[in-house]
Image 1 (cartoon, rainbow, N blue to C red):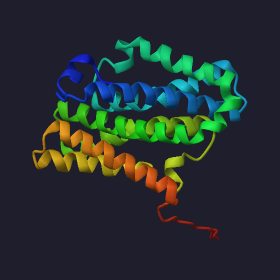
Image 2: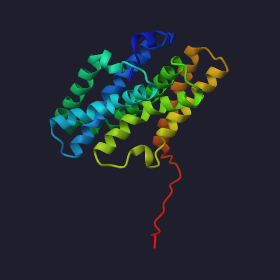
Image 3: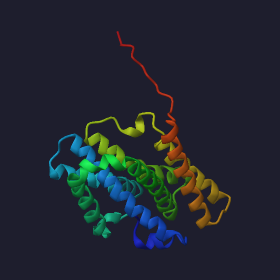
Image 4: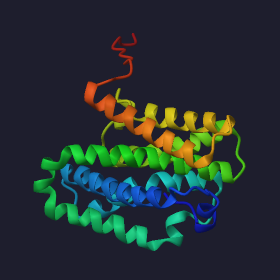
Length: 221
């Protein structure tokens, strides 16, 4: 979720407009992915709207509540609510055609993950939190919406099932902090983190990179 305007101004990088566009595209794509998940569970229009909303804006909401950052971003920008709900409802009309652009959705989702993670890190930094909280803030923003979507749809969240998703968010947050520690210029560090995170996520999808799985089947006597 995008922080308040005053916080955004303090980011001070010339690429902000690009990041804002990516953010808007990302919440739209996430809302549509939430609507598709709701459709697979045969939810009604209200259910579709709720799942679309929490998928797109849930991560930022959780982050703001955890950090005590009020008012919560989307309450100050109701246009984001209109955007994600409209995207969710539109998905119910065009869903039959979306399988043809699956790769585009994966790309948009990857862009959203990176953008959300960087925004979450910046919010925590502006509020003066220590590095470990900055990393957690970035990850909360990046992955919480997908977790809420999967839980509400009665599925094991994707981030807990081998995919390099949360790991990508973690890597981006750590790289962002590392570059900041080395006093790399803010514009450059943001662009490097975005490019590196996007490349890692797309490579993981292409080569099917996975985390080790812990499987324990023994029954307790």
